[in-house]
Length: 480
Figure 1: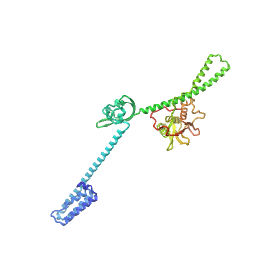
Figure 2: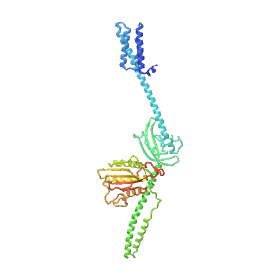
Figure 3: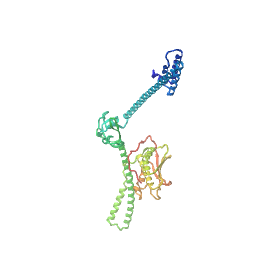
Figure 4: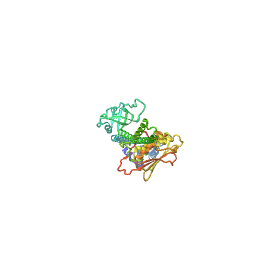
């Protein structure tokens, strides 16, 4: 009954209390008793205690005391003690009802809150369990001594084991580096970091593992949680891309050296013929041997390189992704050097025809050249802007340096006064032209400004789209 009353609306409780007070007052007025009925006012006061404040209960107790005195008068010498007793009793009943009601409602709210928290916790646990079980990455929890406690299906696939066979095994059998991670009982440090190490499957096959792990404590003891990803495919793609880049650069470099050697041999041959026509050294065997050596060297330098050495393979590339990768690489080093990076890019960029790795290397070469040029200038700004043309896309890389000196021969290898023999710009232009692009210097702009012209992808449906972040390794960039 009390629980049901506590669920009523305040207006209904107030109406019931008023009805009871009226009924008691009428009964006390109409029927004559030898004893007072004032104690019956405790029941409406108990009801009012469920909805009223303490001062409202005080007024209600005083009002009921007045009714009891007015309708059932006592001798004068007993009125004051009687009224005080009735008032105190009624007020105590109301305040006690109010305290019990507040405690009950707090308990109900606490139970409801606990139920909601339990439901939310259960829902979170279900979502977390679903995430772990369906994750493509291997998730493991281990004790401080390396015993596996929990492993999801991806972990079993990664290590080549049947389902539910990993718990109870030692992680050092598969990832030895995790066995050397100190627990929080051995050190005050809490580890939340990542590493790249070797892993081993059950059949002995070795793979590259990217490991993200952390240590934590539980009532049962210290624990180690780890997330593992097989990085072998990324490593293979990275090394293959580096090899192709090296072979293409070597082919272009050897061709440039051969061209210079042919020019020198041609000049020496002219001088040899002139001396031979004069007849002074005609019978000299050393002179004749020198002519044979020059002729043999010219033949060697004139041999064309075989085309089986891989060139950068043009494909459909998302220029927005390439520029995003460039931004990730540049921002930190430019911030450390005090260089401001300015980007002027359209909201949408079309697909272009290029080799993703080679294009990024060309952009890095230009920006690295700009960083060196800005070391001794007060205003350090590198700007990268992109404009879409009818026949292609134009990428401009500019800086606020001193610019290119007049008479400086750009895009020519083996020139004096250039860093790394001037091969950077020469190789960059060769890479760009290998996939129908071009690289040129714009002398009309202040500082150094280079423009990359890229051809639009003619038919993206027929070519392979290369969309994927570059491996997070550091490659040697081209240097001019």
